[in-house]
Length: 327
Ligand code: BTN
Image (cartoon, rainbow, N blue to C red; front, side):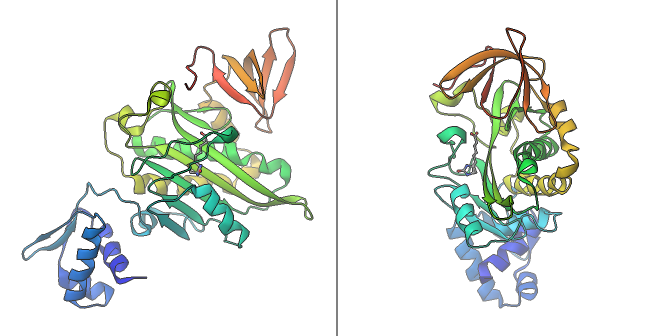
């Protein structure tokens, strides 16, 4: 680990408190002047570190940069997030995670970035990923799952992310089938799962669970303003993105551990904002209005068409009747 990262780890551990140069030097095994140089580099990178005479260095509590040093101490996981790549900028964390997975990256490997220049959404859409505002994170998972159970990964991840956001921010998070997290009538987070199937073994080879959470945004471009929200807009408070990212990874590991018993589905249904509602479903070019009656054991959307026919949908985009469309 580069020296400046060792210094950063000590400062993150003591965020908001002063640590003397000699204490840092002792714990990372370097000289005080090397500590001073490392602090200088960190400041040049944008970290707000004050130096108080006789008291030492202090990393400001307001500092919200994402780093391995700020995320890992908050993990309670065994595997997920234990290998983590943090980028200042990237095209798409899902794309990078996919290339790592193809090279054999281990279960739980996580990729996170401060900004995405080509963030991907479902159905070929883009995901708005401005600098320093959100959590843009992808996790490689390699659970031993049949193809049938693999289809549940997205809904299982939606429960985990909803629980994590609620735990950290207090927001009552609802899930819009299949994988959007809502606060009230606006979207707070989207999830894109991309999977590779092992054709010979007939099971899942790996899946990339990509999560985009709006955290600090105070405004959105015109086409999103009426449909998107952020934790900051909902609570009026600043949320530590590092703490939230770690909590998402904690909840994800916990929920995935029990994916085959499908216990997460009860929580998924409790958090659903479509069950019992009139909805509009887009499948390809076709848009139809129907009533949602539930979510089945395969995570499929149960609907009643207006002619009384009952169906289970495995794909499509759902809009609540009256909900605004993106422009
Ligand atoms: C959607 O709302 O349609 C899904 C959005 C998923 C966005 C996340 S951000 C991290 C990961 N990398 C991507 O390119 N997309 C996902």
